[in-house]
Length: 238
Length: 310
Image (cartoon, rainbow over all chains, first blue to last red; front, side, top):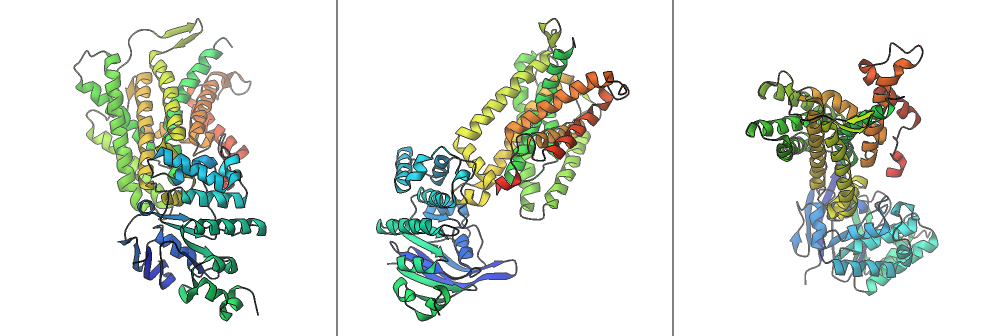
């Protein structure tokens, strides 16, 4: 069986500066795969390229058997690849309900959309309570919930989450990680980018450690969690 | 003070005209942060589009019958030019330095003016525009509304209502708001932002055409230069109201129109200001208002602070 997402020798540059220097990895349906690494390792650049916001310099991306080269961002969503971007990027002056509806922009089944919005409210009750409120008034953690809920509204085959725990309080971070675990148990395929390596690796089936544009180490989440060099570099142990 | 109601209504009509044009500046700015300085010419071309239809119609056609067709003609002309400008002049420059599209806009503005001057029959002089027959409507003994103005006073609120509903209720309108707030994330929702940008230019063009038809009916003539000062005033209105905000554009237009009308009428009565009244000074007062608002409230009357947009 071929993987849902296959990335081969992907290279991305901003002008002359190469941010991603030939990485390869894959995500199988039902898996949670995580990319970890420090700031500037190229994780976010990788996700933005996968969703079509950036153009690759070289390499190949195949999603669900189809090459993504030259496919514009708004058509990639239609193929089933949803991206919850770094920094959340909810639409601040639209209501929570409108943000969720935009997540389902390409769907035509209004009954299904309504049901999925209800599902998002069940997953994150606070969003349901404040559905008519402008999204910009939410706290950081609540905005993160909205961004994840919105990404799920397209019923993606693969959900890409970029730094979902960034800037959150420890309690909120735990709650978000718990939600990701819950999504995993429901069978959602997830590509997770995180700086919180401990949390990400304990959730992930597969992990890849990125350093300045390259994957330097790969393994199962468990193996990486117990790898000595990973522990030293990313988990703060001496 | 006997003439105050009439002055206010005159200001309101003028302001509604500015407001309709201002929508084009504000929509395009709201979506792509571009000041489309050629928008005044898109307005002017709408007037010539409407006039062309009138000339094609058999002579003696009643204006009330011709009006819908002229409106369509004007809209087709304005929207065609606005969307062509987006596609061929602005889109290739997107992502480049901000100055490039601005200079292009100014160049385009001159080119469009000269094209009409050179190629439209007899456009080197003002061309007369059909007028409603009959006298003005008398509301009170001291308040009259010209028939041409009545068209504007009906068209402007109808257009605004339609636009407001479109933006807040329709799927495309919501996509437009999303694109204005965060274009990259809008793409992640599956929104074709290129198409949204074209839509913003098209709506602005259509509103400009309605304004141009109103302008022709109000003044009885159109000319190839009329987009310059009207465009500048409408841009002022858009900034005054808070650029990027559609209701702000109309509010800014109305405020500007009323201030102009009051200034023409009453400034000369202020002791020591008797030299500064009358129509010749109206532009001075309009731009003075702009400067004052920019000093006191830089985001405009209904604009959000830039920090809220992040």
